[in-house]
Every structure is written in C-alpha cells, then in structure tokens.
Amino acid sequence: MEIVIIGGIAAGMSAAAKAARTNKEAKVTVIEKEQYVSFGACGLPYYLGNQFEDEQEMFARTPEQMRASGINLLLGHEVTAIDFTSKTLTIIDLETNEHLVKSYDRLMLATGATPIVPPIPGIHSDNVYTVTKPERVMTLKEELVNYQHIVVIGGGFIGIEVADQLALQGKKVTVIESDSVIMGGPFDPEFSEKIMEAVREEGVLIQTQERAQEFVAAQSNVISVKTDKGEYPADAVIVAVGFRPNTKFLDGQLEMLGNGAIVIDEFGETSIKEVYAAGDCATINHRLAGTMYIPLATVANKMGRIVGTNIAVNRDERMAYVGALGSSAIKAGAYEAASTGLTEKQAKSLGLSVKTTCIETNNHSNYYTVQEKITIKLVYDAQTYVLYGAQLFGKNETVLRLTGLATAVHAGLTTKELGFIDYAYAPPFASTWEAINVAANTAK
Image (cartoon, helix red, strand yellow):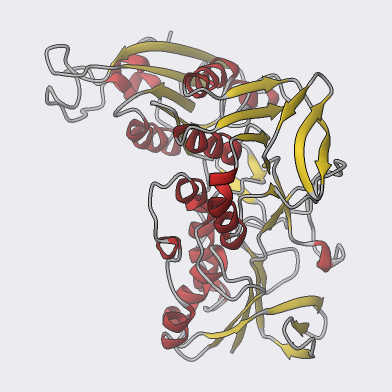
C-alpha cells in the first residue's frame, strides 16, 4: 500500500509516524515544502521572548529520525495539483524546478495554513514580520536590538503572546485590533477585558476598534503605522490577523468551508473516499457545535494520530475522533486565562437555552501563602444544567483547573454533579471546596 501525506509539520508527521507503526507493510511518503519536519510554531513567541535559546527545542523530530523509522521524506518539494480520479500527484522540486508525478493508494492532506497578509500599503517592507516560520522569527530576534517601537496588528493568540513577550524585554508595544476586544473568539467579553487589562499592566498599548490603513515606509522599512484613528511610530511591525488554509491548489475538488478548510468526518476522511485531511487545512468535529475550523496544535496532533491509524487499516477497523472542545489557554502578563467548550455568545448563536454563573474565589486555603483569586465562568443548559463551557482567569494555578472542566464538558456532566466531585485537597493546592466545586454550586 502506497500512503502519501502532503505536509510534514504537526498533523502530517503525527499521521506518518502512526501509519508506519500501524501497517509495517505500507510505504509511507511525506511531501513537505520546507527542509524540516515536526516544527512546533507555538513556541515562536517564547523563543522571541528569550524564554529559551535553542531553536531546536521547537522541533519534535529531525528528518533523519523520521527516515530511520522507515518514512520516506521528500523535503523541499511542493504538490501543485492532484488528480483524484487517477490517484496521482503533480510535484515540483523547489530547488531544481523539476516536475514529477507520483501515484498513491491512500492520501492525506496536511498542508496547514498561511498567515493572512492583508493588502495594506507598505506591508511588504523589510521590517514587517509574521510569526509562523522559524527563519523569519530568527531574523526578527536578531534585529530586536535595533527595534524599540513595535506595532502588532491583531489581538488574537499570536498577537497577544508576542506583545506580552516583547513588553517583558522593555519594548514599547502597540497592539491594533479591529474588534471591540482582544481574544474575542475563545472568550466572552468580560474575560477579554480582563486579559486586555493584564497585558496593559505590562505596558502594552492596546487600541481596539481600530484598523491599520497604511504602513508608512522609507527606504523599504516601515517607520509608522497609520490607522483610521491615528498614527503610531514603528521600528518593526508584526502582522497576526489570522490564518487561511493552504488548499487553493485543490481547486475546489473537495467539500470545503467558505475559508477553504477541507471538511472531514469523524474518521478524518474528506468528501473523496480514501483521501483524508487534518490540521490547520481542515475542519474538526466539535462535540457541541459540529463542524468547525479550529486551527490549534492540540487538535492537529490528535486528529493526525487518528488519520494515521485510519489511513493504514481496513475501513471496518477505523477509529473515530471523540470530538474537540476548542480548549485553549494564554498567559497575559502576570495572569493566566483559559477556555473550553462553548462561550456564552457561541451557545446563544447555536440557539441553545443557557444560563451562566461567574464567580471569584480563592485558589487555596487562606492560611497558606500567596493566595490568589480565580474568576470562573460556567455556561450550562438552562433546563438540564449540563455544562457546555467554562472560562477562567487568574494568576498561579488557574489554567490547570481547565483540565477538570474540559473533562466535565466532554462527559456531559451537570453543574449539580460538578459541585460535588471529589477533587484532591491540601492547603497548598486547594480549599476543602475546590474552586471548581464552588463555581458549580452557584449555578441556579
């Protein structure tokens, strides 16, 4: 069996490794445009912030290690077209410009996504960066000594993480966000406001409901950013306004969402039999909301492993993915925030009848040192009390509590059950009534 995987970063290499282990008789080939595999881009903001120095920490496996495990790698190669009827790929060697054709029995699409680069005048200047690939971020890191005023376009995960890390290095950072709040996807407005204040405490200027209109450049370098409301000095600009799935080369041959994300089922299979997809180029099944586009590394790796099994076995042996919850977390200055399941606004947009509770409680017993407050919001069914989602904000020991809440949402527990779950207690870690219990018992 000839298994071909297009893309070798997160989902693709997870699938390749699993497929090779699952079916020893199969020939597994990975085609990747870059000269590396298994790269964890989530580490880039923290590499930029000097939280670690060795960039190799962001690579889970080397090409040599993958080849040693029996996987055939075609690095520096790009698939430009697919004929799904004849099961053939048209490939170009990016170094030699040579074209070749390769056939497959089963195919996986793991082409990832590309950062959106809006058509703003001056955006192609030398000192405008995106934070997705190691080479570009290494250049930015080397040049930071020459940059004092840095403008970040976008208040999502990457924009806020980068802004936070640069502020810790004493840079004067301005974040421009077109929405009324930052982090408006995974959080309801009251939590977005808390995150925004936490980042502002680090000295970051955050301008919401504002759009960049021009990157004013001189000699191929941006010197200021003009918006619809003002102008900000800039020694460098970081663009982080979202991602677009790398699926344009498929020419609409598969079922896709409007943004180009390939629609897959619970097995990872696309609308074409024996063609699978996963990662940032594909949708995922959300346990509560159905088909969604959730470009998160956790989802990519899990679905990659599922596809790695299914692409290598008989159809009746395939395993289904249990479904995602969009669980995510972010560090904002001295604070932590996390979200799982549905936010209140998401639940209402789905037509669900929900109630919410939002409380502030302590992280552990008051007689133990460094007690901190944790804010917890629960979203639950107005009639059945089944938990649909949760959000948290606080300092030390906040985000890890999301593990218990994500499990509760996944299992369909009610707030009444959650209020009496027997969580571990000791004064350094919790109160006799764990913070999660306290929040759940306020649900009325």
